[in-house]
Image (cartoon, rainbow, N blue to C red):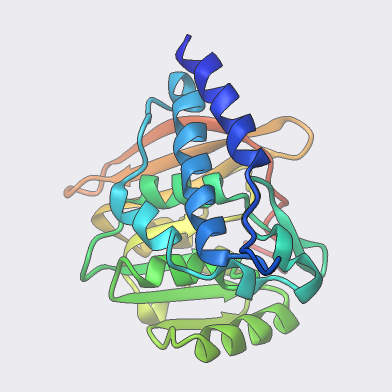
Length: 246
């Protein structure tokens, strides 16, 4: 019953125009509608994830961060839909619900230092920047790393540092990290990232392969260094790119 109602509400929200009386897109309203969609998707997937409500802090931030500023101009009218968007170089900006869910699972707190791999356009780093003190981000595709850095600086996200490189190895000079978010799939958890995760921290990663399926997974490191793994949701991400790894 609840899922049927939520699905109907989703259709209604999608049908609502996000344009002002002058015909221009009202991005503030579009963000508010996006947040409503995230809440609905959380309810619809709660039987699988065990999460029926995204942290209110995250929703407040996503209602503020200008997602449209991180995509090509021709895609800006579609920036707040519940789907991924291409950002060039065969890379995508993840759907809003996945950004919200992965952030919720990482459980970022004020004062935290967070690492992410897969900077992409820089949007997820911007969301994290509102929730923690410092964000360190690595993108294997150098032109994307450069454009993301430029966008983040232009929008005033000076607490985000991004660079080109292989995120498999983390950013050891800036660690250890309170939370780590991996936004590409791997069939194992990289040892360098586990080593850079603080005791008490969380690592969120899509585990699996393109052929055999992936599951969004949370790795929690206890205060004594023991690891606990929790499978959350089947997903589909591109594979983490990089050079030779040993």
